[in-house]
Image (cartoon, rainbow, N blue to C red):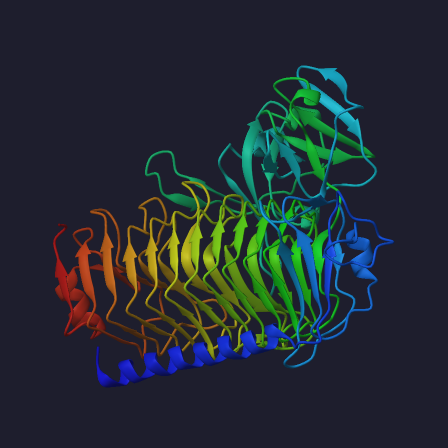
Length: 565
């Protein structure tokens, strides 16, 4: 490592330590702070909220006259079926804090309710239960499940099982659906989509599916849209498949649901900061929120640490921890598991979101991206650090996203020292890191990216710096991909620096894939390539061996390619 890199790393460490020091000072409060205790079993809302006489409900804390420096402490081992809504802001040096006390598991904000007493059978292991509105998640055998969709096509147009269906709209991410069942006699398709509400019967459908002979994914010409989106019990193919329609939940269950402890999302949010600033939220568990587990909206200078968010559903924002229009926050050391949408998101909706840090979190088995930063133009994310996180098994439902995904981002964002592995599947494309449309120059460094189903680092736009990353087996041969991919969207990829990376891949895989027009202005050198196919570099429609790659691209004059070992 040269002196410049060493100094840059030291500066980064100092900045992070200063941020931690500031957060620690802010979170500490003053000697005049009041502690309020909450115990769901032994408390009463008429009590003064002391440790000896605690409050009982979360509703009581939501209306409490909290002052800067106050602490609200939830008893460990207790649970509440309520949303925590922050009623006030702290000030610089005196956060309002939410934490736990006592022994046992973290206090639980359970956003679900059990369905055990009104089930009726329709035969063939199909059951119904009255429920007034659509839930975002259903727990079957304690596992969160997304609802299924029914799409009816003309029988001759029926897409096969395993195909991906897309509906495209200019200047917006495409709507996609994963086909999990197909009946060519009736044209009925069963699918799962994180974009369920966006499907319609007017836009044509593009089908992507594996070629039966080559195994490569191919895109078929657009075809007529489904003529019917009404939900049908015939789409409930496996135990745990469900949907909601006209005031009822329909479920296929291997045994009577009363024996399966079926639960559904009943509350949209577990915690909502409601626009308040200078908050600390630590050591709380949220389970089964329909929309967002922990919603930090229009809130600044907050510390979110040590929380567990489990099984967030697919309504509206569909995210475990969501920072919307919020700046100068630190989210660290949280666990986000089985969110049916995104795990953690920093999002700018109608104002710029800046100087947030997402660090040391573990995100597991998300339906879409593990961590996402992005926004709505012109309100974008900038100067945000995504560092030292572990993302595993992202994109278990969504197609063509990433473990860490960025889009509509301004300059100054850094993705570094993350571990991203095992995303996607043979049918669902998931890159390790993807920098997508309208993103300013970004730094991607010191990440370990392995065994993702579609590329290690995949970028569009200009000026990215990609260095000291370890990429291993991220480019399976059933997609046109590679360990590092440059793909144009609105404009060609250009002027990127790709240095000092370590790429190891299988005997039928590519190291680099650069689309036509996106090979200009790059500095690519000092990389190590291990394995790969006979010609493992793809440059603007040419497959090249290492020496041809050096000659045609002008890259990697100080790099080397080694055989597998």
